[in-house]
Image 1 (cartoon, protein in one colour):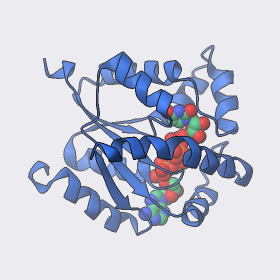
Image 2 (cartoon, helix red, strand yellow):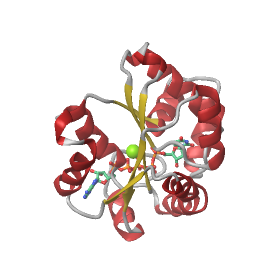
Image 3 (tube, helix red, strand yellow):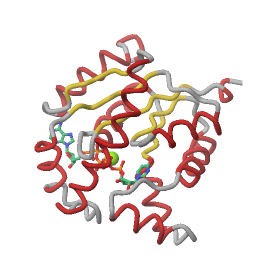
Image 4 (cartoon, rainbow, N blue to C red):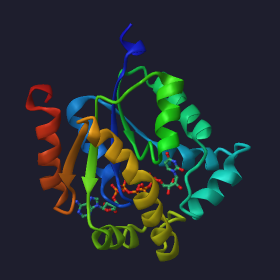
Length: 190
Ligand code: UP5
Ligand code: MG
């Protein structure tokens, strides 16, 4: 029965703001399952699926993959997890993503973590990440920043108007950022 009403927290913020890093910490302390939409899309490329080439091209250009593709991957991962508490990292990235997810799943997020970080800091982090991501080059990084400002920030504003955004200053050391995250998830859950 609980699985019909899962708890979902959207984890949003610009490229390199630290979403993945902080989600890993949250998982350890608070028993959530971490679903990175970007990781699921990259796994789909590697799996050799029929959508792989399309996804790869879109990621290289910093563009947002069609909702139905991403939502299918998220739904499958939620079902396979067996959990009922999810951090959905890097999704929804535009209004269409947001509306389609609500319509298809019937799920509204409990709240939205927003990792707020200046572009120059995010750029530094991405350029020194060195994990072989095809979108971690300066040309694609600039495109990702533009898409974030134009398409993803409006989603954050939408949830902010509903009182659901928990904004965190992400331009601090990892441990300090996590202290702020813990204050939101609540010591009672630790
Ligand atoms: N780092 C982290 N925190 C730090 C801190 N406080 N101080 C110093 N360094 C810190 O961190 C990035 C780097 O910074 C790491 O080296 C880390 O050690 C260091 P990370 O935690 O990986 O940041 P994150 O916000 O997760 O950055 P990421 O690059 O994953 O964000 P994006 O939003 O750009 O990437 P994502 O994987 O979500 O999406 C990639 C692409 O997939 C998109 O551009 C898009 O093309 C596509 N996509 C869709 O189309 N639809 C979706 O729904 C999702 C993705
Ligand atoms: Mg990430």
